Image 1 (cartoon, rainbow, N blue to C red):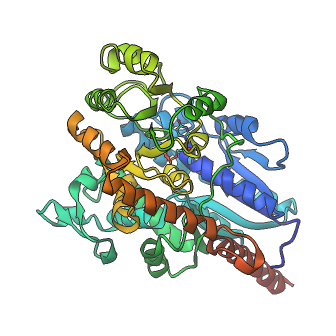
Image 2: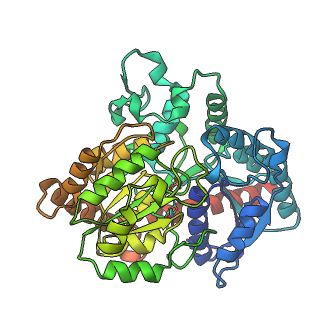
Image 3: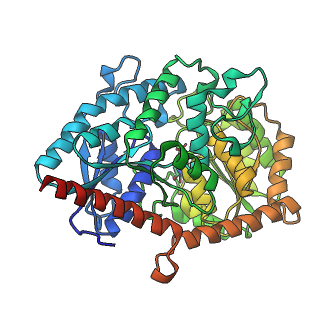
Length: 491
Ligand code: UDP
């Protein structure tokens, strides 16, 4: 492949940790392939990124102005949707459209300044960035940090709102029958409140339709594992779809958030535990569970004496999730004293854990996760089976995919209003983690196979080049080809 050393790729993620992380990881990969990277975001996110980009990287950071005070209802200086209460998320998505003219003039300046722009990589929520790139004759791709299956369900559900067309709690997707049956409990709150003319439906319809102006879609996924979902987009968009995953941030690079516990301390504690004995629990960068669910989960952990745990806690639903965690209020009386201190069976991490270091440790036997796609990829690439507790967005669909298509997940609960019982949580955790559980053995075996599939997909040696590496080559070739064609037309 004829890669030029001088070509520049513009990366433009949505303002949220779960979006910035895969974009940064992809930027570092593209930089390694010899491309110049310009990473675009709002000032506060860029400031955080400045501290996280490794000194060896020459990624250029560019700020776009964003004033949340211009958007009624948003808290002052909100530049990231991670800490926003749920009703404000849609306002933030709508407000992000105000970046459009600034993004256009940034690209315009770069073109005029003679920067050799090869491609613009826009976020799933910045569908409009395709049109902006088109106007300037630039190659544009959407980079989905979500998986093919999960996002296909998300996309199709927004475009069709199938649950509104039936009285049954079950429904299927008219343009994605391969996905099988869904239950209304697998729908995020925004779908349940939708009527087709509400702000979410309008935003999603407009945004997703704008994808059709893009030259293709990159998925942070693996073609061998995600055939149905990727096939859906090939069919639907009639555009190339490249599965280039897993694109994961290396452990030594932090994306703006520093762990609140040192990785060394975590590893030292994990070293002291038997293989597969630790359950890692985290609900991602922006979700939390309800106070009663938290209590039931803690009671379950208290009961399962032979399971150790690392639990990333945030204040429960209804409280400011960035505030300090009050163990004495939100966990059973004496929990920290007994389980954490005396029994030394667990670590409670308030806010942010070094997730990849934890998942890559052999003592970790399962991951209780909200099924955010980055977390899923991080778990699967380490061969760690999943206990699913989806909470929002396409996480319910990811859980369905992991249970039905991949066979590495057991669902424990759905959503933050689901009534969970301690006994049920105990049963499910034991099913996955107990050494002699048939289900657990099957899941561990399958997770090991999936780890191997992933390892093969990212092999870069010429004779055995993996599918994800080939897909990345194909994407870059398509971008270079378009640039050549544009040049020859202009001559
Ligand atoms: N993460 C982390 N420490 C934490 C919580 C999350 O490093 O305590 C990272 C995690 O490794 C993943 C990302 O944050 O890369 C979360 O992304 P995901 O797609 O799983 O969920 P989201 O936050 O978007 O809901």
